[in-house]
Length: 172
Image 1: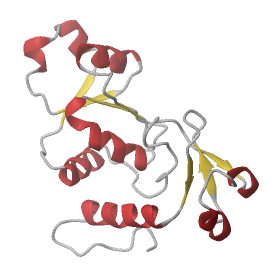
Image 2: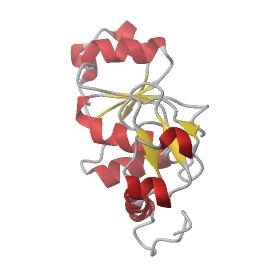
Image 3: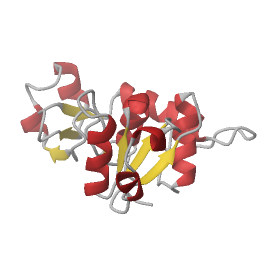
């Protein structure tokens, strides 16, 4: 599924997973101020898949609300396994949309030209990089530096089948 076909909401237990889904380009509602019934109601209203590790939701929330939501219980305890579980369960694209969304604000990034990025990035970055993106909500500027390379390598390891060596999915 592409980011246009699915959106998520992650409860408090899965904040790190939400960040990595955003890194993959997927809209994932999450945050310290969003939790419990409020988050579940918003997920239902916005047709989002509600990601949780809480297998006892039915004990604490009204059935009418639970019936309006698509709820996915994430069984894995570790972040790499959680990400692999969600990517596999929903057949998410893992290479086409990476770094297209702000990992903090959950807003799609917009491309900005080099002149617009000057003054927003360190001088050595302004001299060496050619591609820049900005979050229209928080104003943070992004570029494809070593942090992107490191994140892509981590993703490649995490998403690789445990029985086979990772392949160069991200062109590294």
